[in-house]
Length: 591
Image 1: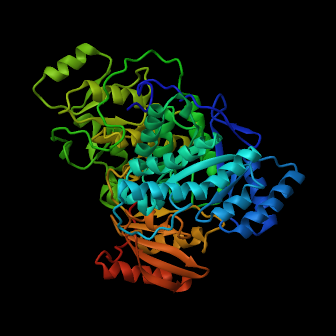
Image 2: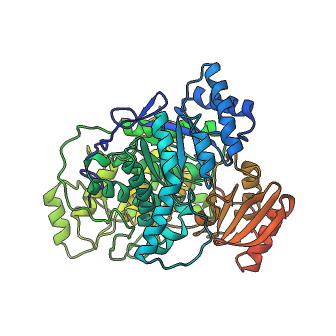
């Protein structure tokens, strides 16, 4: 299966155009940026105001949740109010669980987003073995539920997103395909086939997950399957890492998932999901799109080599283990953090106070082999040598970072561990702010880590050593390559949210951020809660207004806890399961 024309040459995937209101997605259009308002959909004025705020900062498509028929009906007033005030931003209705709400919303909006996992299914986490006949009967039931919406969208000339979420796959899909990228893809294709049978083609796909590795593999698999289906399955794709959280960690996670796929030429519209005010999402999304705009379309032709990784399933590249500067590197050892001698010297006096953000290997002490992966003579000499080496791409060569390291991994003997760099140069661009530095580093290093490439990393684009070290470790955490602190999965707010996500997330972090290696999910409602919490140790989920349910994994264990008591009860739950430790003294010195 082929997911892109050449993983060493950037070329945007060719798709058909789908119109969302007046905004074209796919085709020759630029990559579009979208977001979602966070207020109650029944609050017409607040919905109008938030939509206009988003449009003012460059959001091109705005999504609004429509959890009930009543909410969907109020979209008429929201859209009318926007148009009367001169705002032409296309409006998307976000639908979960209720086909009746989708039918009402489709009367008023420019696009309807449905989730195949819960549009016609109620999730009960039941284990059922389906015969082929039973499975076919379930598909027919879905066809009956989905067909009226498809027909209405076709009649009105509006678009649709068939948006699979890793966290809300149906029991039927889970039992046949498992909690996998393949299950995500097949779930979407089932609905797409129904739409195509009804001669409806104005739809866009998405494959969202809070885990960047799962998200990347699912989108690649989707594109490969579309390619197998035929040339007329060239539908546009929306990218997003769902429940990314807030702050630096969320921006890193989003860059790893979205940035990696954009570099592969996949993606026609994106949303960066932050547990922050929605307007903060737009600069991050714009910066990711701008990075791709600077990728040369006509770079030097590259050979279509056999890549070293399976693009549809994560596996760390197998190497031998070696020792460098007192640390073991490669094999199954931890991903190591490397610094230059000059950076080490600046923090040497406070290493004992840096906690988990310490430098591990000094570049100049590590006997690192620098190589141009196009230099066949140097490659042959390295591979013919009997000694295992720590290898990196030489600075200042004229290749994009991801391309250079993919080529290196395909050319050197598997035994050699690889040191990844965020940039192939050591000069900081003074015109670039830290957000751009962070996104470039997370995209370049994070996407390679998700390819299974890399045994150590070096940040070169940030001169401040404390900040560069923090960024190094946070990228490793975001890619799931090295867990050294509490991991949070937090959804962005929307009209379904049953508590203030920003303040609640801050309170939970204040109490739990010392729990190294514990993963906590913070979900405003049940839509993606249990599924996205499958990888989490504990979950904090809005169950009703003012009430919270607590989960262990994806199993609810405490119900209807008053919100004022819920954070304390979460701490008690963590203690019950033996994962609580008392916080140490002062926090580590980072800069």
